[in-house]
Image 1 (tube, rainbow, N blue to C red):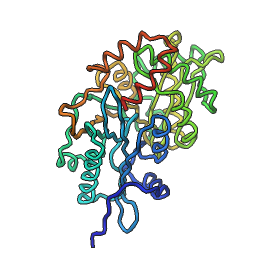
Image 2: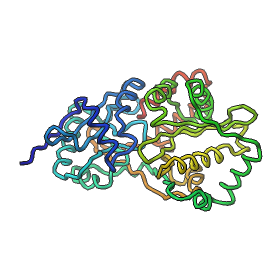
Image 3: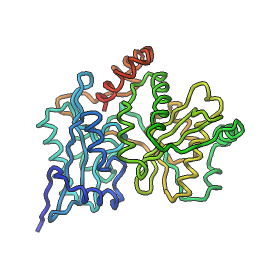
Image 4: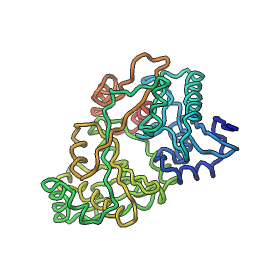
Length: 357
């Protein structure tokens, strides 16, 4: 007898965590902690769905309502990050079709402009396409994944000699030392550098409360961060999420006046060695726009190129969204943003960032 139920998540946290830990088809977005983090920091309303058999969860789908005067109302799986979609312990096409129907029904009830799934599981894509989801080619995102399950010599050999290895050696000659971040004072030190970088690039920042919340909720099991220091001064920092055997590059920032010392090269090499030593299998290098400057930086580290498609289901909106730094409203805001004084950008930036999702 087919005893499958698709319904909203009812707080079976132990089962959700068990599925997230044991499923080979889960990713960073499936940590249950995001349910609280994104609600408390941004006010996003979670819409979590589960597929159960005999009261046991075997598949789950996290999503959030993101509502903005500038960017519209959307159901996103999952905002703020580059991943989302379904996780599961076993594949069940019929059950997953019912899940997609449930998600679309929720979008209709909420009267959203569209539903967005970020980098869903490849096995799930044919079901999405059957129901009318289409890939949004306005987003040209990808990542690189470094296999850490080799010896350190092999990792070093895969690095580009003329830029990456040269930068690491230069940073060491400059006397840069890598230190682990440990407390909220270190989070504050990271955030000060982060604000300067975001303003320089014309990008609205996450609020400080977001970094406090991820520290409180995820450190140290699912979050680690490091600093590059010179003569005791913190000149660069990087933040990484951890899940199962994977390390996810989240943020990397550095003070402009110290870029010539190549602190980011040494920081990343330190994390690669740390992950290798501590038994992690992959370093996932974060979402990147293809052919951007960051794309070419990441490409030189020996990772495998992986596209990060975004799938959309249009509802009230009849045109695929273009929330990309090179497009439309976002490009105008970026231009304005880079000219704002720091005090104003620190206040209004997180509000805009929340609306982007």
